[in-house]
Amino acid sequence: MIEQTIPKSLLELAEVQQESQDKLLEYNNVVGVSLGQKIKKDTESDQPVISVLVSQKMPRELLSENDRVPAKIKGIATDVVEVGDIFAGSGQPALADSDDQPLEMPGPQTLRRRVRPAMGGYSVGHYRITAGTLGTCCYDLSPFPSIPSKYYILSNNHVLANSNNARIGDPILQPGPIDGGTYPSDVIARLSRFVPIRFKSPGAAPCNYVDAAIAEGDFENLNREIYWSGYVTKLYAAPKVGDIVQKTGRTTNFTTGRVTNINATVDVNYGGGKVARFCRQIVTTAMSAGGDSGSLVSDRNEGAVGLLFAGSATRTIINNILYVQSLLNIRVTEL
Image 1: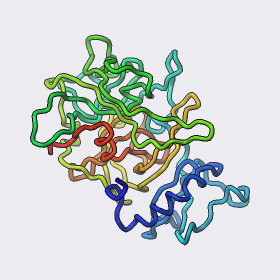
Image 2: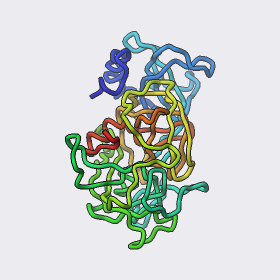
Image 3: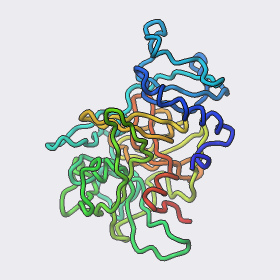
Image 4: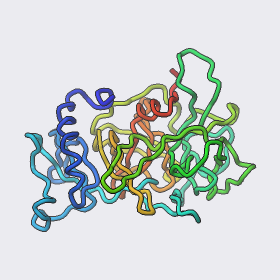
């Protein structure tokens, strides 16, 4: 599937990245490895590189020999880029409820009212979290044309399935609990499927590809439209560095960003000491805040790019839409 998600011209770089990233991720301060373009004097050049993402950039002389990123790996230039610490929940540390499970952070500017039919961009959440964002509405992936038997809302695992701590059939509220959603009057759907998040453990760092879940609702209560962004009509599964993307989310409303890195492998903090490694991710400039998790990101031509789920003070992290559709077995477009 990697050939479908990155430009053919970068496949050779991607192979070198794959061979070297596990070792690089063991370096002190390194939080991710990706493909990008060389930054020279704060300006992005046209030179493709392996971008090593660090929480804090430090003078080379202050690093031990074992923590110094080589200038080249198998002839491919590298670039060290400071991005800060990456958290699920769009760049802010999570809260925890009484059972110490991660919760989504609220924000001051929100699409937080109750709306029926519910559409993308509005507040939503599992009954035991605070709130995230409804990405869009969707249906089962089946031969086209067909008659869908079920309809769903799409968002993150940590928004709809409480970071694995949920049961199929759990109520999903719109708006989310912190925005006034209550059980049973504001139940919009019931948890239907989620891709489990596999967390790092001593000696093991399994690759996750999505933080994603769906919840089944009544057709008349679900709207595929995304507030201010419209309807996605196609997939744009292979974004390039420099592409402009957009999203509507519960906290920061309508925002745009620029793709800075692709094919990223990043370590994401879920709070409570839990960290999960995600592979084949898309990285953009900062375009989100806590509560925007679950937003569907698209290009400017109604092409679905991915599902927003994490970020730092300077970057936003997005699951590629191809993996979201495939792993949840859903269709987010009309065709």
